[in-house]
Amino acid sequence: QVQLVESGGGSVQAGGSLRLSCARSGYISRSSSMGWFRQAPGKEREGIAAIESDGSTYYTESMRGRFTIAQDNARNTLYLEMFSLKSEDTAMYYCASAVYDDGGSWLDENEYHYWGQGTQVTVSS
Image 1: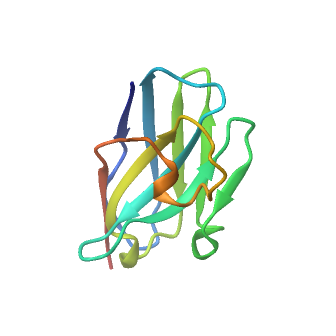
Image 2: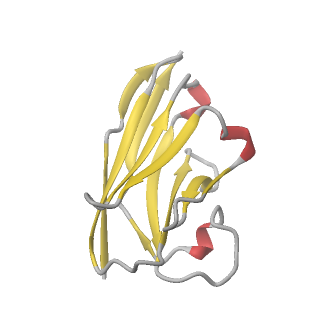
C-alpha cells in the first residue's frame, strides 16, 4: 500500500504562486512514477505533470512553463511549483503514484494506482 498526502493548497490572487507538496509513505517502488492532476468543478480530471524515477519529466503543453514538478527522494516528497496563477487554475489538486509502467502516458490518470485526497487551490482575480 502507498499513502499520499497533499498539502500547500490555499487561496491566492491571480498572478501569485503556490507550492504543493505530496508526502508519500508505505511501499515505494524504485521504478514508480508520480504525477499531479487537477479537477475543477464540473470538469474532468486532467493531468498537469509527471516525473519518472530517473527524473524525466512530462507536462501537459498548456501548463508547461507555469508549473514545475520535482521530487525529493530522500524525503519521499513530490512537489508542484505553480507560478502566474490564473482564476482558471482553481481546482482540487491531486498527486498520484504508479507502481509499474504499462507503457501509457504518465499524464493519463489511468496509469496510476494510488491517489491522495487532494488539496484545494483557489485563485481569485
